[in-house]
Image (tube, rainbow, N blue to C red; front, side, top):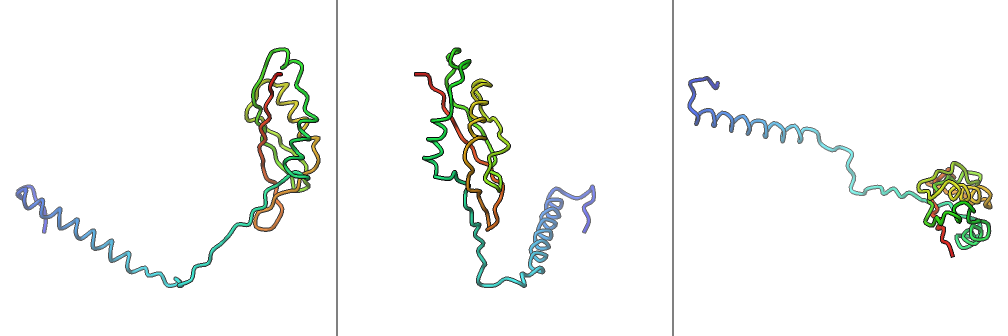
Length: 147
């Protein structure tokens, strides 16, 4: 069963179809020769227990802390700068805020003011995943608006 140059187009098509069918049968047979031996009727379901990090006293207390301690930077105020600063930070295992990273800035004085207040904030309750306490990241958005 060879396909030579003097074969007719119908013969060539026939050989291609036969080859395709053989490949298909081979793949089906090889898939069936690898049975799943360890399949049980009952599946084990894994659940990740995640407890997010949180400020002591809760979010309302943390927002009050920011409102009381964050000062509108004089330079940004004189330039009429308004908008939102977004900072990503890590709550370490000991509850301290570290690794502050600016994701969105208005002016250096604005994000520096937010970072300064965050780093001085009371310790947070660290987060956990699957039991142990982990260093986890959090984001905060602070809006600067002129009166």
